[in-house]
Length: 243
Ligand code: ADP
Image (tube, rainbow, N blue to C red):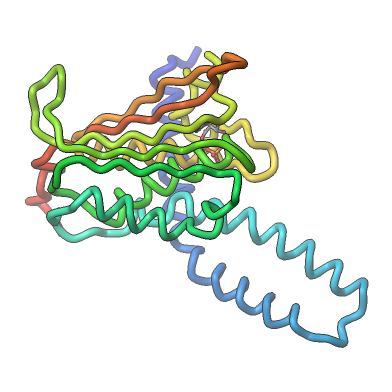
């Protein structure tokens, strides 16, 4: 019988492949999306044709979701650069501004200290946008999301760095979900889920020599989830063997 370790190595390899394919297909996908918008604006289209078009667009949506969840993961970043986590959070929030502007959503932002770390900004932005999207999916139309970042030293290791937390008042996760959430392709979202978001996020945080974990409750009166990321100030190991 296959060991659990082998099984998870296999899954990880398949996940890496999926995410590099997603990266490759993103540009043509964007082109198709734009072309379909152009076609949509044709006033003389027959009702049946419009139906087909709508179906094509919703399938396309799903593929795009895979691509955006994993997009910058395999992008060949240059060397790590100084990163201001406060700026990262700001740019991700503005990316989601339309979805965040719902009247029953409360978004709170808390920023303490002016931390600077070393890392790959594009990839870290990817992590934050995956976590924010999940928080939004969990709260639905109404609820609260609190994003915090602050300079700190790691409680256990004493390392200097920054802690970023994203807390939501959404439905929370049961024990089964909590156990599996970082597995590639594990998803509880039947229509839109790919199960790659957290897996990719974990790879990126590992690469930065940081850590990510979640606490969650499904209790009817105080349900919700907190994702917490620690990033050390000195960041990833510089690639000296770059080709
Ligand atoms: P996807 O969002 O495509 O399902 P992810 O890897 O991002 O893939 O997440 C895996 C699963 O973890 C989700 O399907 C969901 O069940 C759970 N999850 C992640 N974030 C949250 C959250 N903030 N609240 C509740 N469940 C979450």
